[in-house]
Amino acid sequence: MDIVKRNFFKLLRSGALNEFDTLEPMSPYKWRRLMGIAQAQRVGDIALRGLRNHQYDKGIELPRDVLNLQIDTPAVAAAADTTLSNKMLNRRLDRIRKGEPHVIDASMDTLYLLNLLVDGTVGILTRGISIGHAISLGRYLRTKGDKVDFVKLERWLHTLHLQRMAQLQGSVLISVLDFEQDEVPFVQQVEPQAFSLTMRSLDHAPSETDGEMHFWQAENGMVHNNSTALRQNLHRTLRFFRYAPAETIAHFFSRFAHSLSELEE
Image (cartoon, rainbow, N blue to C red; front, side, top):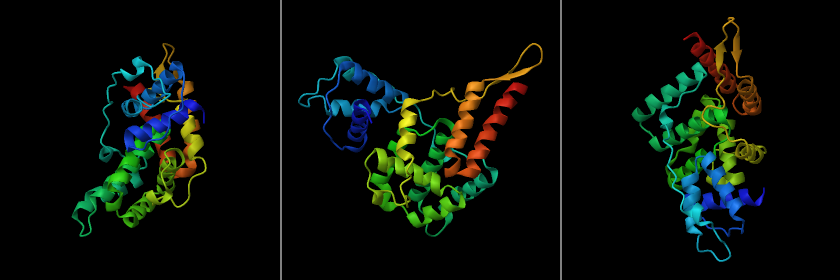
């Protein structure tokens, strides 16, 4: 991990989790590059809070233009609205969501965590690992983890075939944000690829539309598509298949079908 990324994660731990680690001095160019990564990952506000926490550190000269950045916080859809592409698994998810408030041992804190993990799953299959989502997951575990019924959560993850995908998300917290494994009880074994997959996402941060498999019809009637996006989606499908096979395949074909339906319209 290079110096920019080391400082990036230190700032996130400071800005989001109130953990303070010594920053390494960098050139103004590298501080600006760091904030570019943060904004691409939608954690610019967190990184900026971390920067301001460290602005008076000895030996750290932060560029004034970076400290004075104005960053809008992007609107985030509610995790409870996220659906799975696999119809059978989504029906199971719907039953869990509708049934949990009415059982004797209802745990809405556990249901919220499940929704976070489902949302993270869909995000990973759409755009790759999100640092912003990892921060949200980590914050929730730190603030509400003691109220979560992890036995019930494990049962739900098994029902949805998402145990290993959840374990990947938890492994990102351990591998990149320095969480202890006992803080993430749904991680039985740290996924060995969690670190490299996260670094890849930092280096290849997509925009909202980069992954869209657009199809269009030429005047001669031939149908064309964005071959780069199609290839990216296929590679992402193969990359994450092992973590949630049923949902990964369904997600790919759902996006493919959606793109074709837009052509028909």
